[in-house]
Image (cartoon, rainbow, N blue to C red; front, side, top):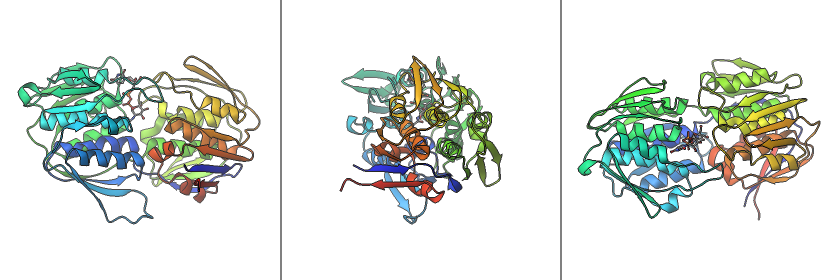
Length: 428
Ligand code: UD1
């Protein structure tokens, strides 16, 4: 299994191109199931999760074709076409490898009037139930049965969903996406209240509109969707990855670096940029991207994760790594997922001083981190170890690289280009 080796201490300087957003890609791709016409997505990141989603679409009868991009290019263009669906079942073997597979539930139900999707089960960052996905779909007319580890959903008499009104008790990105994708083909209007407002949801709404859907309130927490009988194909560019951009911003900051994140969109990551400024980092918004420059010592932070526009839970681990070398005490509160401090013991093995009390983690800055063999059990936790490794003395070996490959397109190449001493090594 591959490992990433980092020899810390190099200051990062130069440009890092930001890829298309993984989490947007994973909700735009299932939209191919909503029409028999082709859907072409540009700027899709080259990631294991995107490949897996392509395989899932194939399983359901959709074709996927990657167009003329060279292996050296970042991003890809993929055309998907679900002329006819050959199956409406997302099997356990695929769903267990990629939680986002649950996002075929809404579009299959909307298009075919039925869907059978394996329950995703627990995952590394907590329990992650899908009850809200199911309640929201029920509210717009779906009949739902859960048996033998599968969710079986159908529209009344195998036809179309009715539309309806649903108020989320808790903000859920995935459930908002699923109900949106189902509601666009319903035979009626749907109103979603307390909807997630993440930029990836806006990207999804914009694609659905490009496919012929009518959605009011895009970007707000109240979405009104007028269902229609059919949608058409579209060509659409995936938004830049705000979490990738934020991760490299933390990497630049911990090394005292000066990096331009080309193609990043500041509006999508305001809370991340505000936190960087509060930590003493210079943030310059440019036409071409965002410049991140860290000149002096960083300041401690108090951060609490929250749904957008709040501070993203997907940025918590990377900020924590960055704050390990900051003089003073930083306080993190994780309000979204109950088990999202798994990077803490690994950072501690590198010399970090972090105390966890339930949902709160207190980071007391230390003078130095020391390289060590480490591993993490989820994507963002793995990235936090990379960030710590970039400033640790000696060699850090990050194992279980497949987590990083799920979410960071050519991580080591991008970091090498700005001066990091980082390489991927195989076992052989
Ligand atoms: C998405 C992102 C993930 C990010 C998260 C929060 C993708 C592929 N993943 O995950 O990277 O960390 O948003 O920004 O886009 N919940 C329930 N019942 C449900 C659904 C959710 O109780 O049916 C709870 C979850 O356990 C969690 C909270 O709601 O505590 C938010 O989860 P949600 O926004 O749904 O996260 P995901 O869509 O899974």
